[in-house]
Length: 225
Image (tube, rainbow, N blue to C red; front, side, top):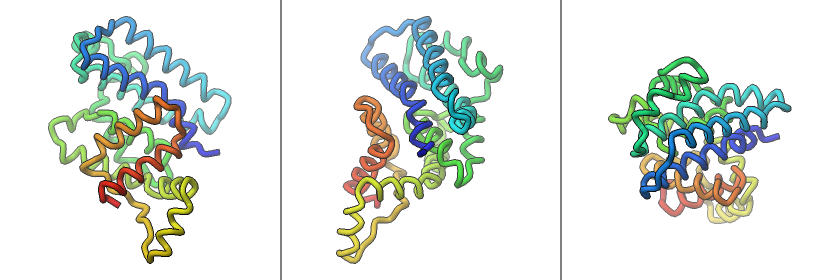
């Protein structure tokens, strides 16, 4: 079983909610604080239920739950929402973890990721792409560095998925005497391209593997391969 895909699917509804929430706020649509709290509580209950029957997935989700929770707080606070200040008094991180260090701890988790932590890395990277800034909100160069390092951990997985999705591309490239570099550096385009692609994936319910193919296609067109 591809647990990177499975874990991403568990988080998909939350990613969709946060992306949709931010877009609604930017368009001037009123979002009630009680409704937002209830919706997110339900999402986290559903996540916990979805992993309950699979011990391996449960263990991975236990690791991913904290970054998923602090991501939700971050998006609600920094989306221009009228209740952003009120939300700071009812953080999900404080409710679920009795802490208020997400702005620092998210990056501590990212720093401690190992090559074998591809499942957690995919969640951390998705959060960065969706807009998590934390303590680096005013330090874009550090944020870009974390994003780049996190993505590097995913490069082997992304390359293997791309090979499964479009193996003919490798055949064509080999014929031309060239081979696609598995390490895709998204530095300057990560916020826009990956964020848009995540939204596209969520809205159309494509698989994580299909998202990988889209990322590589966009990166190729932008000349970053």
